[in-house]
Length: 429
Image (cartoon, rainbow, N blue to C red; front, side, top):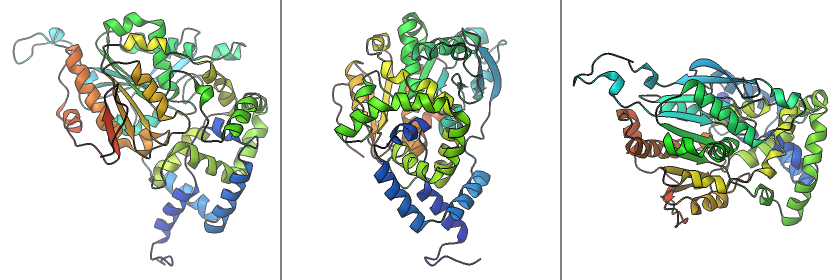
């Protein structure tokens, strides 16, 4: 096999090229910024990429990565749950905790029905993603737990929102109602741990606002990853002040307009994939050393979201204000985690949430971006295992499996650190 000038094989060169070619971010970021705020910078980035990595090579890289990467291949037992408005939500049950016997006798003579139930961990994904974005966490936490993954309405394998098709605007509160329907249908009893990333974290907060009694009676722990409780309109997206103000003013109208031109936008998106790659890299990942397979996987997740769904949900973030709902989490084991280079939900917003959650653990992953769960899965998995250990003790749940306990006992991973709620400074390990 012929080697490249630097000694790498063509396959390795292709993988390296894919890593340089792009990462994932929601198409909302692409559309909003494409109004011109960063047009000059994007053009320069594309020009540089074309000088170093040919378009044909990038296409070969993407095809090879799609064929080889296992990301998103894990599956559970499928279920369909009806949301309050009838929208069919796609759910998967995973983990060995569902296999616990319902009857019989334990070794100590205790009836199985009297034994504590395992934790049920419900994962809510972010905007323009689907449940497969939890790939690494699903793989790490399967043993001994009951895991629930679901696609939020209009995302992934779930049905297009029926209420939106009927003319009602989308809203985070509606997503909170969807999460309650999922819990009622597949996990009606036993202790719960709720994990949400980005929009999924907002969904958890909406549930807390609507059903604080659920948090008093059954929720044993909460993890809020790369999310915020409000003030999204203050997020600058890494732009200068003038550019940020312009973006906030024009982006909603542009997104709405593009959402009405689905076929045209989808066709032009394919043509402009090189430009998209520049924004994907900037807004999804904080570093440049991300596994090329992960980069391509994220890109696939984000590109799978139709432009009209992007337009449907984009306006809801500015209206999201759930700081008061955090009161329902007081006293519960809680993890607030973010990357220090997250431009979509900056870590300062995580610090603001922790200030309102006495006892919560704040973990900032140094150098990671918005898709920290994909970019840096090791510290995310470890911190979730630590949360599960605290939650199991808090709720008197069934003991965690040796695999999950071992994960919790691993030393902190490079670049991650934790801090108490009133001490937001985190020193990298």
